[in-house]
Length: 280
Ligand code: HPA
Image (cartoon, rainbow, N blue to C red; front, side, top):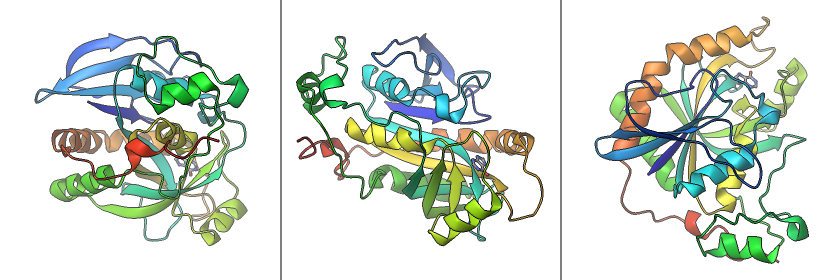
């Protein structure tokens, strides 16, 4: 089963057969919304709007831990994260798709681990007796390796699907995660560019980190909704972000369906072993 997290302007996947909607409560509180379970070609796709339907939560107030944990409760171990980003790299045009392979983290206020040592919460509904459960029950301190934060198998499948569909895209991007909710200053974007960032957004961290902490496969695809602050010298608006995401809605849906329909059976990656050797 595939989990899909939708970003700004993507609050549901229209036209898919609805199987169920589930509300989940976690030790970290409520996820952003109900999980929408849909079916496509006998495969289940579980969708969650990151900001909630109606865009209720700004990036710094999203309950990322609850969102990711909810997927685990539903026995999902593969997540496709979709988001809107500003383009920093001059090769990027609004409307392009971008697959990230690295991130730079400039977030400030977000809980970004499930493992809080002696203060770790345990989910009494979590019956999966794996390293995640063990480390939680032990109150372990955990430092996962994020040298390569994204699943290489899912990234490759994203490329395959984007090639099949003939959509313009870029791969191996560096995503700079800012705290928001304000947009960046022109100087910040210049600095991020010098640091090697290709795109800027406010939500990929800690989402990917939390997924990795519980041994999930996670990949991210973004849509460039605007050129980042100061590049065009014009005021940026939320309107243009939402407008572009709505314009790309059909393409995003096609991408999700091709991606979900062609997921490989075998995963030769280390994602299921992220926690091995990570606890002190
Ligand atoms: N900056 C940060 N987040 C964003 C942007 C941006 O320019 N566009 C869409 N999400």
